[in-house]
View 1 (cartoon, one colour):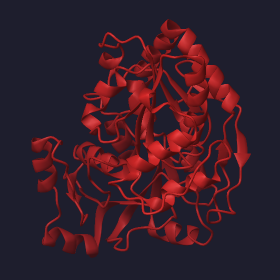
View 2 (spheres, rainbow, N blue to C red):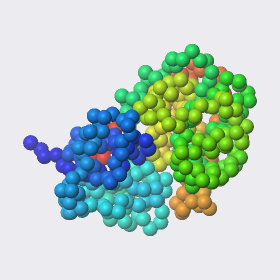
View 3 (cartoon, helix red, strand yellow):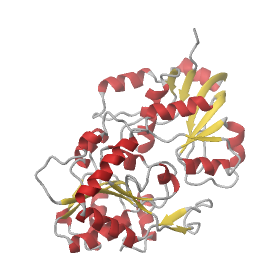
View 4 (cartoon, rainbow, N blue to C red):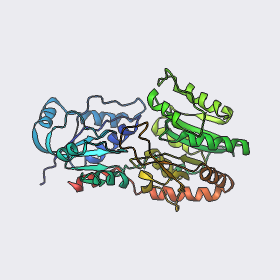
Length: 384
């Protein structure tokens, strides 16, 4: 009988941010390949999470004896996140089978040697991200994220409320990279042209610096948010909307919606807009939206290319490369500006052709079934 290896994971586990959601699902998927041990000092689980799952995750927390093995020389698998700037966790463990998990947007000069010396390979969040590491002579495989089909599925494709208004969905961290300025600009046009257009946002951002990157946008008026925190960020979002001529009576802010309840919100919307300027991964929020059988407008570049297609979405293809080294560290060379007129054209088409748009959403749901957390875990273990 084959003895399964121990798999040490340093990936955050939580229910309320991207890395945590990935770490939670991947921990479960990896358990079919070995005895998983969570080596992470800030484990969190929201009250809205599954209590049984929470109990199981806590049973995976590494004991002091487990941590001693992890820090010593061993032959087990160690999975560790690579930060946005290419950094690894301070404690890399003593194993030789180290795997980096990355959704990186760039790789700063000077970091490549450490990653080559430390890691067996990188599990990259998209084909574009994989190529980023290969271009720096770092072994890598593409291991895109999965969608939890028990939560996000085509059963949420049809509206249930007696409301014929046209609901536009936008999610993600409010910042320049995610492109909510495109949403605001396009929404102003749509609200002025059509009286029944409503914007539904799951915009969050507790970090003032990141929020204020929106100052680099030439599409909207933006005033720096001084003193912004997680508790008052909604005020600054509303202020930005008002400053750009948006009718707040036709805006629904649902930033506090737990992930497990997001499909109930998505179900009542008509189209999702994802004009991100760069994505190292495949954009989990976009994938979850399409998995609910909803049509999406999304930029066709970087990590989005793996999940966006003319066959089941409305891609934004008129993109222009923008270099941002004047504002960001060296390496941010593949940001793209979308075409606001193309975005507005897609929105108007979806507004006027709702049945055809719904048909795209049904195709999107079928396509997203190919992306599972088990598949992500399999790609990582097979590469070993």
